[in-house]
Length: 271
Image 1 (cartoon, rainbow, N blue to C red):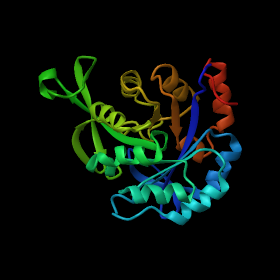
Image 2: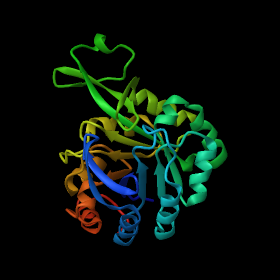
Image 3: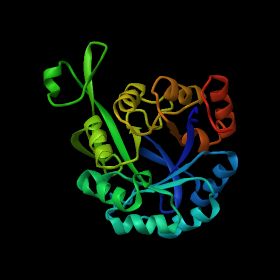
């Protein structure tokens, strides 16, 4: 059986509104979260991801009522993240209508949250979101104990950031992704901070490294500007799903069009 690739619109939400920025900065309004969620459901999205992007940095909980209202309108799998710190928080969000939850900052600070969540709710409910940024070095010795690859004449590794991309951790993204899956995370939502909102394509090296090394589905995120970028994420990056925001929110490419382009290029999707 051929597994179909998933196309997933991402709703980055702050104070109930969907926003989109570039490299996690310069946010602009993209509409009402509930309305957009319902619209994408109708348009044939395979799943939705809903991220309350200022919940962790503001040290507040996610907006439960917004999750409930979106859940009432959406009939496809629905992942929610942002500001989840405890097993009780996870339970609350799943009860509010989410099918899966996404952990980022809290998982870095308390990795046991992944294993506890997986044990209680099942690995399929736990998505670890990783925001990664390239760090270039001139020689392998400059990045000892890091998982690095050679690009041109230089070497690079990827550093994990938390608090919505505001705080560098010094952690190696590939090593952290490996640990997260060992702890029980059923999926990785992998965002390239370098490519986010730039619309020049996903970080295919990063995506491929994760896809080839980890035994769980990888959702590529950050950089989609056209359908070819999504096709490349599947064919070159070997991703299982592609997340996109700008090209859908600002109606540049409808989801059905993207799926048809994938099909024409030999990428199986649910049409």
